[in-house]
Image (cartoon, rainbow, N blue to C red):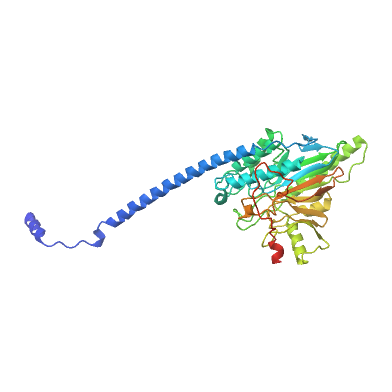
Length: 447
């Protein structure tokens, strides 16, 4: 019976299958197409990564070779530093002492910026060679490992190229970190880069970088002293780590910058007191009078909030001097709030006023600003930047590019000036690029 029914059933018309039971052949085809596209994309990505990596490697080698091609700087009456009993580098001279401030070098170290990196090397070498300083201080942002502009996350590549340049030039140098030297996404953090530069210093004749005391926030809080023949410190050069971003602005897209921390201010206060004690002992041994307070200058990357206060007061007075603010020289070229300093308050400026030691503060960070104010008795000064990379189109402009020579006299007073790179006195080994020398002065135009 079963077979018979089966035979009859076989003759009956079959019911159409429901859509739920139909094998989704188009979906299988779509899945295969997706996999093929994914495979092609991954292959292209791997080829892209391979090619850009090779370009970066060989390009950085070429720039390292270029850095090594510059001749050593001939410095008359070179002064070699020694470490004092506190571990601070100390130069001894009874003559003028020349510091050259450079800031915001912005070497990218990746495949997207090899030509601009070469320009920066040429610029730095030309200015140092002409100025022949006793000491070069870089106030931050040697590196610029921003991937969509540099083509890399590797911030050590930039540092290695710059070290090669400085060691070949053969001048004493040190640095304070900037916000771009160690980004949140960089391969190497502040401690790593501090170890790198300190290792360079340990194996170098010219790098004087020190990570600084471990119980003080930041990396690179350090002191360089200038001492006279009687053993009295006539000038202390303070370098501070002005940190990076704050208030959860990890990538810096909101321009929320940190301030000096309280233990840095205390370190400054305590080391000044220590230097005064040493000066008193040295003066007694030499039978001369000791200065009541050692004179000092400060160097770091991000400007103090007092620079913003000074600018606002100056602008509110129709860009004229006030009782508190006197323009020494320069141009404000940044847009918006003009001065992009820390978003909170700190006590460093107030402590400087209280102690009466520091008469000049030098920083960078805002590349189109290169003005100097006397604010409540302390000189606050933007160094001229080098940057060819970070600001869009800045490689085409030259009014803001240069350096800041600082002459420190035996009595602790100092003179300084802004020097533009495109002057004839800066003869470069490789041809200088053509730029527009029109000053960017957005701030004063907008009022």
